[in-house]
Image (cartoon, rainbow over the protein chains, first blue to last red):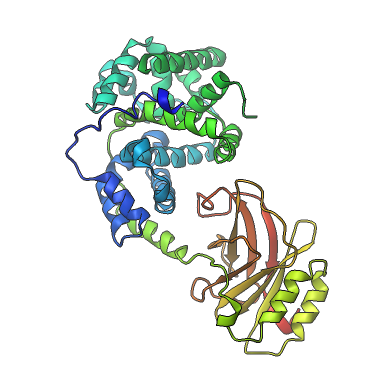
Length: 192
Length: 234
């Protein structure tokens, strides 16, 4: 499985920003102030990730709190050979936010106006960072049928359940599940 | 619950990372991750594939009080339960008692309490016996000098891929305080200052994922529970 990972072997994107991996290793080593530096460098990005899923500042703050506690505790599990530090951080935040979203009863359909329509606009993909692996994902997403792509973005970025996506796209639940699965499989094939 | 078929497993991993699994399914995946290498690899690969999508979420400034709140939570759990120091490093008196407890696995709670009550008093000492859901004595807890000591009276293996976490619920509190993870070996101590032992305080051990509760509150079943009381009144 590791050998088929499409992005693990690509060169790191040259972002020229702060050394997030180094900060994370500092947290793992128990360095004083390392967590604060990591928070200051990443909080607005990570809070944005939680906000996109929860659309509520208090809930997003709870999610980022839980995630930072997990990050402090599990920083030693981060393996620079297996992936990017910012992606690892975002995955922990997403999991914490999704846990909260599930606790808050995500299973009911939503017509949340805060979601807006911009999230499904084709140009939204332009916001994906311009690293090599991101460009590849962008190409692969663009090659998907729009409804498959929309389902994946609504789930991954906005934390919607199958039922909520079905309500939003006004399609039967079973159809939406099948679209998303097909989209995921196409994406995997495209990235391979 | 976790398929062995490679394609079905990969799809489950993809939907886990995508976030579309419901709470029950997501929990099943989370429980399987530490013990299922193929599932773990599949989840890591999907996280790597989809990670750039997080860039679609516009950055937002978190509330200013959040960092202090995070630091306070971390400070509260900073002092983990550590295995007890070697006996030779401690005053001789308590040693044999704890050894006796560990051996006397069939003793019932009332018997333990009586034995404790017979110990010479050294200032205010509180004790409790943590009972299982079937009222079987499992851990003996003693509060002394502001800290806690625990000894297993009925050692049993911890469920594979899980850890035991120790919690205290002071009187009037609604949220338990983590006292750290319970080490293997049947003995543990909590340094003074993490929690102030008081009569009536609940002590409990819950079953948690590796690394301890991800939320700062017990997430798994409470395995053992007891309430601190002055030793002489037990």
